[in-house]
Structure formats: C-alpha cells, structure tokens
Length: 171
Ligand code: FES
Image (cartoon, rainbow, N blue to C red):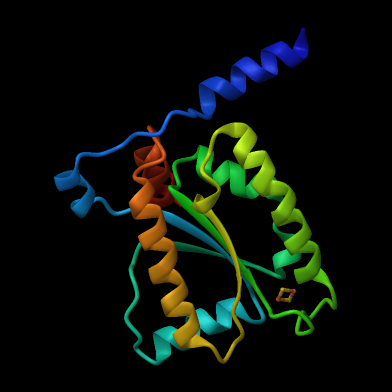
C-alpha cells in the first residue's frame, strides 16, 4: 500500500514525458545545468578556466563537494526534480583522488544511477560524469560546452525549471 503511494508520489513529482520544443524556440532555450565538482580537482579546474578567461556557457550552477564520491545519487535526482535540465558530476582522474578511491566509488554509483534514470524515464544524457584535474581549465570549458549542447538537443526536462531558478535566487 505504501509502495503504491510512493510510486504515485514519484509520478507526480518526476514527470517522465519529454517536452519537445519547436525549432525556433529550441535556439533560444538555455538549459540549467547543476555541476557537482570535487574541491580538489574539478572545482580548481573550473577556477583555472575562469582565471584563464576561457569562455564557456553560463548555464552552470556549481555545487562544490569535498570529493565526487560524496555525491549521493539522490542529489542528482533531487536537482532534476527541482528543475535542473541536466547534471554534471566531475572529480579527479583515477589515481588522483585525495581520498584514494572516492572517484572510483563515484563511477560505480554513476553506473547504477544511469539505469535508475532509465527507470524514471529521464534520458541518461542529462546526467554526465567526467574527470577534470586542477590543471585542465580548457578541458573544463569544453566539457561544459558539450554538456550544455547535449542537454539543449534534448530540450527542457519539463515543468519546474522556474522553481529551481527561484530557489537559486532565494539562497
Ligand atoms: Fe577529487 Fe575525490 S578528491 S574525486
């Protein structure tokens, strides 16, 4: 009985139907991307991109985490539920994690999350995982361009992007 109620609640809060935009609207559509970046590598890579004045889309809202292994898959689901059109999780390259194997744990969680997204009816391309080191400002900028372009092709995830923007503005 409770399981049925949880499923019904999930259907209400996680719309599974894709909202496709007409071509003209697609060109002006700007997706919101939430990026969970590990403090030691990817966040420093993003910082380097900024300091180096590399141009990349401004669609990203960065959440700094101690390690990519700290990103609970539910954070990703929650971000999508709250209106993000896509999510990026990025950490140190294998062998460089400050917590030894946090990034490998993150990769395992990510593989599991991909099949869960499929179950929820969310396109797996909306959630991407990558390694970026502190010296790879250029790689970070191109990664953001790729993620934004991939999510733009998919169109809005549906419904609640405005809610997310309001939450972001209030915090
Ligand atoms: Fe960067 Fe673990 S500290 S992924």
